View (tube, rainbow, N blue to C red):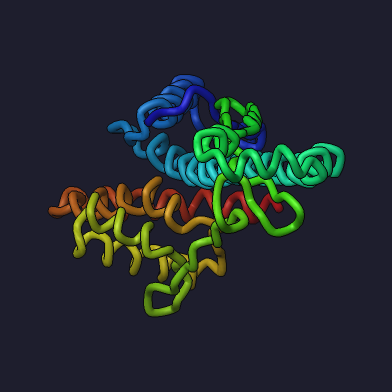
Length: 260
């Protein structure tokens, strides 16, 4: 799914000052198209193509960080909701009023119909967290302790779910995935492509000394696409083009280094 915004750095003006106004305009159009469609456009101009690869790398990193921030906010919202309903459950005034009314408790215990009605007591807690999306979390409290032991709605106190365990994948063990994440990748992409993508990301992290908080997002957002582009870039023409791009890129990198 494409995105409707992006981050561009003013440092690009100096980095790409050798580009003409027309080339720079072509670069901006290509960057916006990629951010909107998540598909790299065809660029015939070699200099613009090299510049686009530099900007694209920054875009991919920023997109991954953004997705991770969204996940953190969702988790924080859920934790806030859980804390609030625990506070409600521990409200001594409400609990003691029920616990100290022996007549009401006995009547409820003897009448299954009333007991079932009381079991449906619920507290709806809604948390709205907006970044560019609105995430709403609805938590229902069906278990309120009475006298410290009896729970209306269930025979056991509520349980909190544990965070799924992540396992190491790849030769260098840099890729971390839960069992569900790995299964989803295999179902969507197939076993062979998933293993190839994990190997690619594992070697990339080993060479660059980097790490991702969510390897699952990284694999889905850019690793599979990078492998597909690498696979389709065959033939002498593609080889020559890549070689020319690398030469041009190294020349630009050398000039940037000399300028400090």
